[in-house]
Image (cartoon, rainbow, N blue to C red):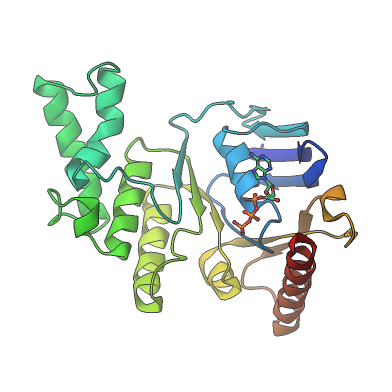
Length: 264
Ligand SMILES: Nc1ncnc2c1ncn2[C@@H]1O[C@H](COP(=O)(O)OP(=O)(O)OP(=O)(O)O)[C@@H](O)[C@H]1O
């Protein structure tokens, strides 16, 4: 059975249709990159997977059951920015989730539990290359290091599904390449199912096992909110020729231009 199933999934906000008629199945261990014009509902889709938003129609299933409507340990998320808490150092950021679980009121564990949480957090930070920065605060870390910390925080509870919302969008190309290697390593080591939004089509083709393009196949320039985005391409990565890439790029740019024009 597929791990995640989208069955005629719709998301609307009032009169605005953001996503419509999404149908797909994703197996455990797949790495799906998601591209699409700005405003096409990519983040909304991640929120549906995370459980902070609910489908308006249709179903989003995890192991055959509706996805829990609150974030839980099965799913971790990293955003482009602000995933970590600025007033806690790296170690405390990664330990926080376990400490809150132990004591919701104090947010602090003691004794053997604290020692165990600390050991787990140190190991996690080492695996993302931050073993030497345990006591650094986020403002003392570079952009790439902050995203490493966000990954450690997202993965400490050993989620099955990792959701990445343009995690490398703000990083320089060289640092991005390092981060690609890190994400691929974590994906393989922890047997994760990954959904990653990117604006960089090449990144989507390089990183994933499968590329989804969110686009509006029906678009009324006068009332762009009338129709939602669908998955217009669902491609196994590596199998696509240059022509497909160019045509995806052209479609995404056309939709972007129309949506931008409608906003102005
Ligand atoms: N909570 C909300 N209430 C009302 N409208 C919303 C809400 N969240 C998102 N939207 C609208 O849904 C549409 C899709 O937003 P979303 O952030 O999912 O797009 P996106 O493809 O991720 O864009 P970007 O690439 O710019 O991040 C936008 O028009 C946005 O204004």
